[in-house]
Amino acid sequence: MTAHWPIRRPTEHAALRRVCRSARPTPSVPALMAALLDASERRDREGVCLAAHRVVRAAEENS
Image (cartoon, rainbow, N blue to C red; front, side, top):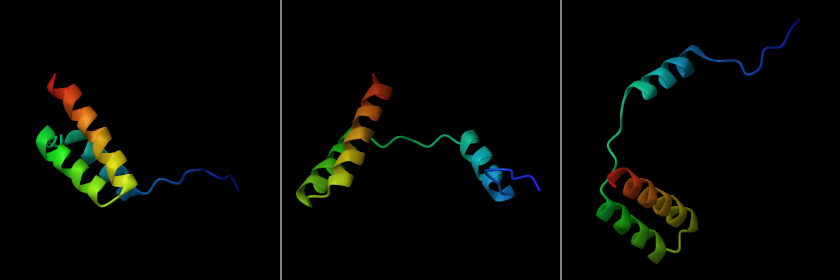
């Protein structure tokens, strides 16, 4: 018996292929900044980190 790891599921392969084909629109920088402020007010560290990274990525795409 040979082990094949990881075992890919057909739905996983289809989902990954579909994601690679579709481009998701990036939210605007002001919307992301609002999300960053909201997460900061709520003292949500993970939300602050995620929003800050998205702001940087959106700013890089727009420049």
